[in-house]
Image (cartoon, rainbow, N blue to C red; front, side, top):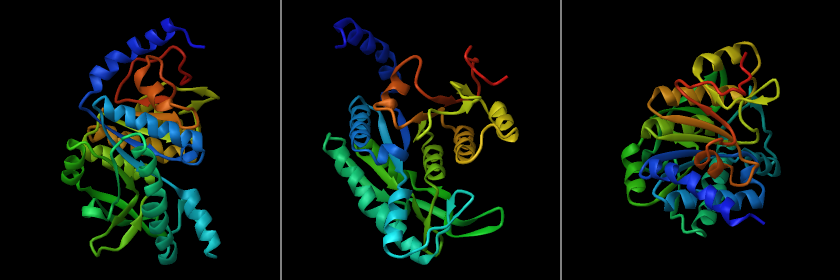
Length: 293
């Protein structure tokens, strides 16, 4: 059992962070195992509700690719990925919209509201929230996949300033009002950049950025670029890191990449001195345990 003194130390350690972040905006990309395991779903809902209750404005952008794939399979639709991005033809886009803006989004909202989080479910179609242009992968057609070109911050700030937690499915519309699928990491970074958020947090299924098996506690752009060029950082972590630094360049103060498989990892990263993941900064004082050499 945790001792009273240990509990007290935890609360005292958290206090300056609570004071620092009251009234600030955090954007959280919610994905991976934290969206699948019931215990992790519950701890995430508790965490974001707690953050809101201590005065932090929370906006969530969620994924849900596994559910999309499962439903597409049941409907007899082939799922195809190009360099990690889902090829989204019209039939698949209907599934994406049905699942992400429907069941997945509302399940997240319901769980948060069980903890009085005052969440509201949205997608980028609502109030012209996420406007997109069709994107390609180095010239390869991805179908109805979009890149965010504008975010309706007036609408988001109206919700945030009035105590509502937006939960956003990564679907946007182009100038012809055609719905497009958006990579959830990129959508979250775009929302954070538009809101000039204090923090952008990516919850995924890895500890953070790893180099030679060791967790990198802090990372700046020059080192990140070198690690990508050397092939040390690969696959899905590459677009995450690039979108993170795009957000930092646009005014986000700090980006965190944390392991959503750890219960309450969100609180541990934000309210403890050591943290549990990788923080991405414009500049930093190197941690002695860094494995960047």
